[in-house]
Structures are given as structure tokens and as C-alpha cells.
Length: 105
Image (cartoon, rainbow, N blue to C red; front, side, top):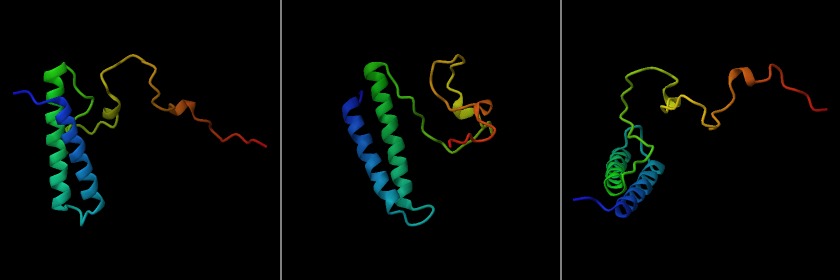
């Protein structure tokens, strides 16, 4: 049975709010309330993403962080599978920085 994407989104929003509240009241590094809220968000997100896919053939651009890092590639976050420049501003390259700040007197 396919979950309703609107209901799944409402559930995801509620779990995000509970995670925020738990994080704001965190009692230590591995607070079980925050850990449980984290897992609830992950589960709710997977339900929403699945419902979105089944109902509309769409997905979000998000992934669940597993904490596992197979590769220590610092450029991994910038790799979105598109090799050409699509006009998205990604910040200045090192060559675009001024050597010395210009003075405006």
C-alpha cells in the first residue's frame, strides 16, 4: 500500500520539529532522546521519499547520512554528477581571490 505523500510530509515535518526540540534540550553527547529523534527523522524521510516516488515518480535531492565514509575525498560533496557548468554559483576559485585587499580611501 502506497503512503500518501502529503501525510508522509506532515509526518516528516513533525519529526523534524521533535528533533529540533530534543536537540535544543540535549543532555550530553549521546542523549538517547536526540538519537531516537534522529532515527525517527530518517525513517520519516524514507517514508516520504518512497511515497513521493511511488505517487509521482519524483524523489528529493537528499540522502540519509549513514556515518560511514568510504572515501576521504574532500570534493565528494561537490560531485553532483553534472560535469558541465550549469550556472550554479559554487563560490570563487582560488585564482579569483585578490592577493591583497584593495583599499577604498
